[in-house]
Image (tube, helix red, strand yellow):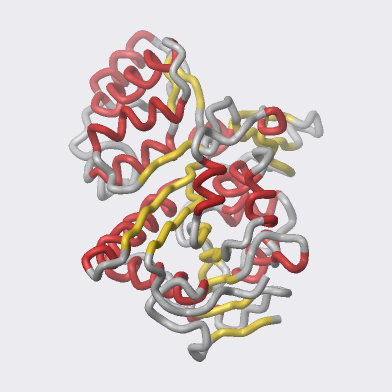
Length: 346
């Protein structure tokens, strides 16, 4: 579809598909820009649809790593050094579990973080859907962004690999945290996705959006599990709203994490062009209208997609806000113009 006309809209509803630390940091920039637009008189609303494929049950507790990473980051409670978990964390419970020999020992739960999982699990066991639980948790953290899990249903990412050709399948958390991605993986599957439904509010948010942004999150295990939930991809491909992606790959390497290993498992090049092609242009049966890449990837072409370059290192909130501004400009929904030099279309 053609990307919309330039200029700030009277009302700006931004939906971001996100997961992981990259998604959390990107949302800090989205929120900063949203606040700036509000100060300038534009009414804005930001909704983050967050990956649940990383969710796992350990020690009887339901853990939602991506939702928590976003909530803590936006709420000012994230550990700035690690980029995940709580600031000023302590590990007494982890040490006590280890003293008992309680497994799994490879996944550590911090004492502060533990409280979140206890409250979430208690509410889920009482019958509340994950979206309602997330809203209740956010009442404390006040993230300034509406957080929605991609689904209220149980969806988990598992990695499948050789294990002497026995096609070992393990939860993504075990593949990455326990084995550090060292086990060969040939595919990732989203268990439960085919029967899951979008969480309450997700499809409405997409239908009402003025622009949808794909955060620079891992395309294989953060964004793909969201798109695997029936109804979400169709809402993007069949809607009129522009969809703009931000590359998580800069100069042939992931900004953070293991996207290179995940892309290799599905035979996709670890390049801005490779990930852009994985999402695909809407006119080619994919989801993208625009693709934002780093200046080092200025020659990137994605069939049927407007490609624009801008610095993509999220070194601080101001640089991240500038990225978001460039994405909105590309969509024709920001203070810039769609005709700015630097855009290419394959």
